Length: 205
Image 1 (cartoon, rainbow, N blue to C red):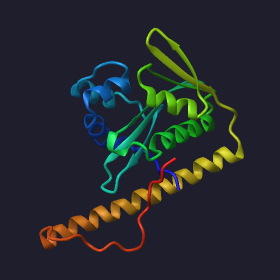
Image 2: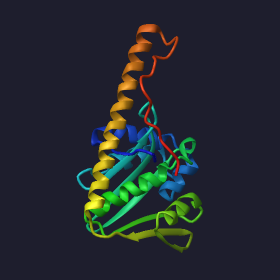
Image 3: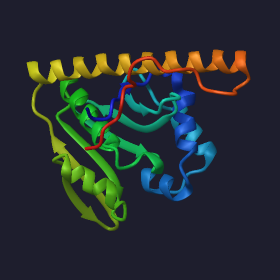
Image 4: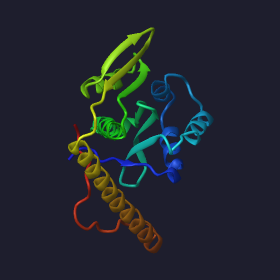
């Protein structure tokens, strides 16, 4: 199974802020194509309009956001920004976020999806090309774009399944986090509570 993603709720902005603040300065520069301070990241997240935009995330077992994709829609066009924390790379998270965003954009009537990044952001350009985006380079910056087809029954069903899996994954992790908190409160953190069944796993692409 590939990396599981879910749509971020507007009430969870602090989780997105924490994710971005965990990125070192160079990763922030590559993500936003310019240097950005902690305060700038907080303003960026506060400025996301969730009535228009959509944010998808991948989380670890403790519900920390380890990968995020911000899909900013403007009519039939949408811009996508993706970030994955260094320890979580190589697990297919970036590809899953891009695919989830593209499917959502397609089903929402977006005709062109594009990404802007610096030419030295080789991993992101590689990911864009791998996912079928065309890349144009000019003056140190690159724009990757893809023309999206009209929605189909398959694309609509794909998004519905992804939504369902995301909710199940989140509920499973939230249950474990709550159980672990109760266990630590009761036994002082001497050991971990037993896990029942198998955990949802994130595969690599």
